[in-house]
Amino acid sequence: MEQSRSRTQNLAVAGLYVALTCVGAFVRIPFVWVPLSLQSIFPLLAGNTLSPAWAGACQSAYLVLGLLGLPVFAQGGGIGYIMQPTFGYLLSFPVAAVLIATIIKRSHQPVSFLRFAGVDLLGVVVILFMGVFWLFVFSNFILGKSIPLGKAFVVGTVVFLPGELVKILLAAFVGRAVNTRLN
Image (cartoon, rainbow, N blue to C red; front, side, top):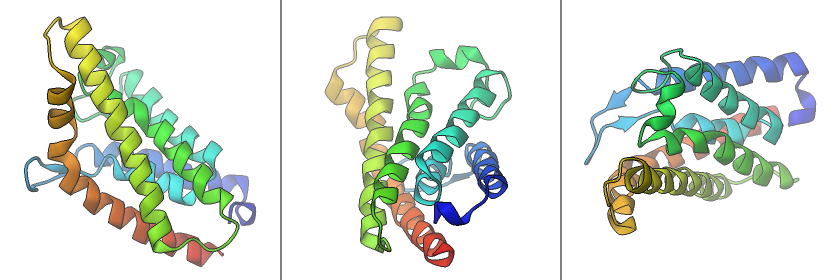
């Protein structure tokens, strides 16, 4: 798949994912416990459809844009955003995208919907793990508010699971469709 795209096409697709991640931060759909933001689906899709280098680059570019001050994060932007308890989720986007792309690209045969879903699930685990870890460290060591790891896990993971499952299924469906068309 990747060999069939030119550098210009990869740049265009990566740029599209940067833009969609920016927009996704502000799209909130009422859902079970918390609103469903579309922001975290785009690292999954980037990993599903780009090479590891391009997937990581586009999600890193998103982070850089936000840290430079563009209001592309859910609550604005700027270097001070590092001091947000939710910054760990954003920091995980390039990691998750590269991991997904690496696993998908190692499969030299058409990837099934279930394989995409499984790999996307792994990407979501990375996003949630890094988000909870940052929340725990930030609360306990920066804010000085003691929060047990179990509570950080519940607050930072459990409430998001229904929405993340929907995003996993959607990303797997789109990723497989795009890869099928490109092959």
